[in-house]
Length: 339
Image 1 (cartoon, rainbow, N blue to C red):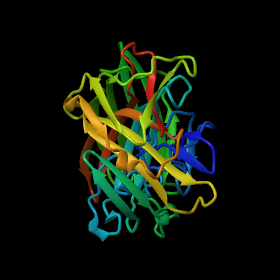
Image 2: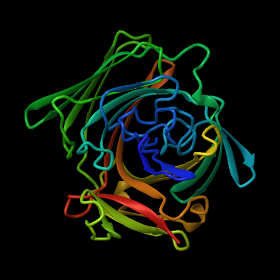
Image 3: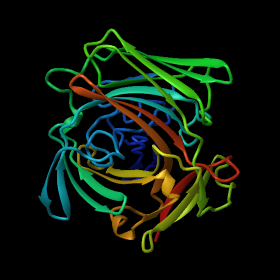
């Protein structure tokens, strides 16, 4: 989990799966049980998480990977639909985030996401949703975790090969490791994921990283606060229209952020997740979804590519995650809430 702000209400990333997408500054596994979302991208050194890495409890929408939609039961509930997720998956997330340091080093995170029994209240406006989820699924399941086995991911860039290796023996939910030699994803890299020696059988997937999405509006054009991040104001009263370039089929533009009270870490978590097809070139965040957040809360903008396939009783999802960037391509774009 990458904590952007520390207060009585701490903003956490979901990413994804940074979400769903986040890790802490010490480099724990993205979503190490404390992350607000199950797809927080890893960006630190190698680490393991026992009961919570990539907790699968429903960051974003509780379905096993904000920003994805839930495939579980839906019934009417006050303030929105009540969603109970029941579709387990194994996620192989490769993330390279400038906002998570060091220097956006590419990291592999493997985690089981099984949020069966997790209940979320979800309200959607357009491509964005506000979800409040319980934390019931963060404990170890009675039968343990799936024994995924030996996972090796390789990235080919300019005729050079970088690799990351993770082993999951069923004793923990997730584990992550950096690629070595270290590299920073820029787009058009070929990525191979191979799995062997586990209970789910072998798996081999090959994907290609699209070019970064370039956020074109709005921009603050201020590098004084952080040379690596462009902080853009998100108005609680007016919402925000985002525009971007270089969208391609299968690549999505995400806005991701969550809150979790430090006064009650076992309490429910609230997440905002927007998933726009990148080919649309624009997306609107409705102000009615922002009431649960406070001024200065921050939200990542991310480009994500998912390759999903059936794998026994599970689905296998290879997820590639990067920041969106400014036209100069020298800063990641992050939204900051204002009144």
